[in-house]
Image (tube, rainbow, N blue to C red):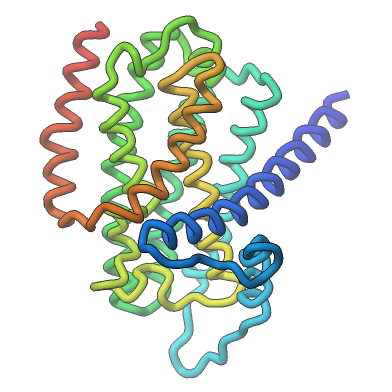
Length: 299
């Protein structure tokens, strides 16, 4: 019986991973379309019906590409870091499957914190193992931004533990009240945090093409670049879902997930990049102090 449950859970996680990756393909297409309309131009519209299969064509192109290595090679640390990011993406999908199946894991939020903290190591290893100073700069920026996000996430986990007397992901969705209506300012700060964690404009310091030549993924191509690129968009969806179930409850969770996903598109198409030191000063001087003040109010 235990073996059967394990097999069913494994298949459920794999199905969730595949479905989320299919969503990622259409999310990338939607992003390119929305950015095209924002910039008053046409997005992808040639491959398939109105460009519907553009993402799948890009996937085939990336997989078929190859790179001839000369005297400079990536270390095994860089390659294993890509594999680690794929494993962490599967861990996110495991939590997503547990929530969708009505699971009652008592430490879901803390497991989410652990998986999120490991993503910083994968990006740091991917940049450090590339033997490229631009990749190293991008990975260092991303790692420090990830530490900032984890500090806010730990404060959020403590607040949720005090509010719902536990760390189950289903506690907040089944509750009659939600964190958004208690403190809407915290929701705005959290949106800023997830923009940096997912390397999105205006806080895409790990991949700022204007000064880092694409950042930590500069030396990657074909399958490895596809893994980095797809896992990044998968984490965007997972962060949108996690934000929805934390700050909202009931039927508002689905609407909030859609809004959070569209927020990523809107932010990339309209907001300019903020200086890195401004962001760090804001997060450590004001955001964390606000979280401490909110914790004091909850106590």
